[in-house]
Image 1 (cartoon, rainbow, N blue to C red):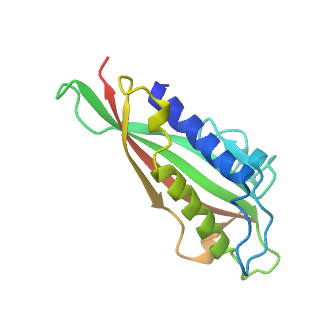
Image 2 (cartoon, helix red, strand yellow):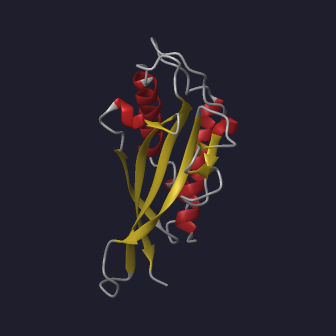
Length: 175
């Protein structure tokens, strides 16, 4: 794992954990749900980490939870074209919650607010202060929505799952 990848993962986890600690993840007007606690912000090592089980959905976690999953990286430029590599790192951020008792309730307003708060926090580039310019330059943070269009698509194994992807564009010196 590169220094930039480690910084991206850990700072994302810490930033969202601090938001939970400051009680930024509470139900919005008209929605009913429990707040996300700091201990419910989980950094998953890989997409197939043991907290996931395809037959039952997320298990062994308190919900609602925010799961942060590094999805890998891809080089943006062919090698040999310059002295630095531009790399795009992807991080999946998901809200996982129990299906509400009222079947027509998705808590869309609450989840949208939570994601808007996460987007504001991460697009302010909290990573830049944590990495030496000689090591890497995290020059662009892009947050994209991956929420399904149909409410029924939020439901996976009797749980609600919605997510966003953080794309971090990093310029690293070639070693």
